[in-house]
Length: 458
Image 1: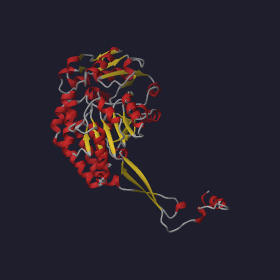
Image 2: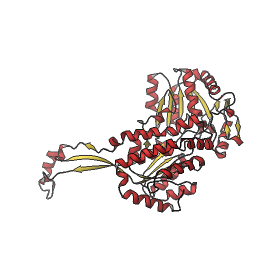
Image 3: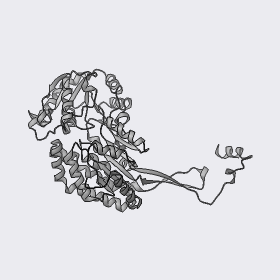
Image 4: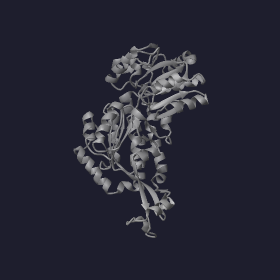
């Protein structure tokens, strides 16, 4: 943060700028979105280097999952005129003559707190919605990805007036200072425990929140599948970014009939993707820090390791690992794994799998591999999750027409595409009544009017 201003001063400056009304102009919003896109494209190399330094993120993964966030900017630029149009609302004849419209308006000054696992994507994506909706924004990147945090600060401070958008770097203390202030909306991506702290702080000011959390996203594998593609898609989705993805398949629920074949298929894919020794693969990321490394190594104690299990503390390396013979009572099944460990639980009847999922907090994502239409319908109807992806993993996140968010403990609210604009907007209802007609029976004295009221409106 390149400023000597205190946090309350920074917020006051943004409030003052918001009050000028400048951010409400559609041309202004469009110009800012174009500036943001340009800034991301121009700093691509710096971004890729920062992600390599923070997470040893392979260039291909970094580009596909972080830099391409500018595609989201493109969709906002294309649709903003439509999103900002007031929409006509029907008015019943009881109110004749009258007309009604719903106007989207910006909330004001918003706070966006982002995590370390996709440290560029998960701050820029909500920012796109905040800009499109006409707000000012304060961004708080994760201190656990310091190189990306620094690049982000550089990009934003070069591109925008801090009275409009600014980055505040820092650790827990900075977050606490920010959360003590009043904002018009707080958008938080991270874990459930911190999500509760954010919501509690926001409640003191009645600030609305969007919480993008996580949870144990199950992956059900039926026996009616294309085995090779299923193994490949699960392996990719689980071990992308070394499993540090909020919508990674957390554990497998596999039909007993197909389990051995599926595990053999996953093993084959791992070798194909990362070679005999993933530690030497340029395509495999690392664990963010020692604390998470220690936590994950601890989870390797359960069940029977089918593949992987190796770790190297000095390298923050944990091999892609698949664990069989896991029970739902094991430690690895008690928390979101958020790392390259895939526990496998078998089932003989889909009802067991559904019951297991429903006995736990609602997950952010649910994956189902099956060609059986009835089974697809049954799983969708009988489970609750933020979203569902059938016969693939992770890719639902990239479809901007699908609102992305959790339910229950996996989050509150959603974003992406139009949903991002909605999240950072207030929809103001306006009723317009001309002086044309004034119905006298509406006003006191009421004597003798009740029967008329019942006849007309009853």
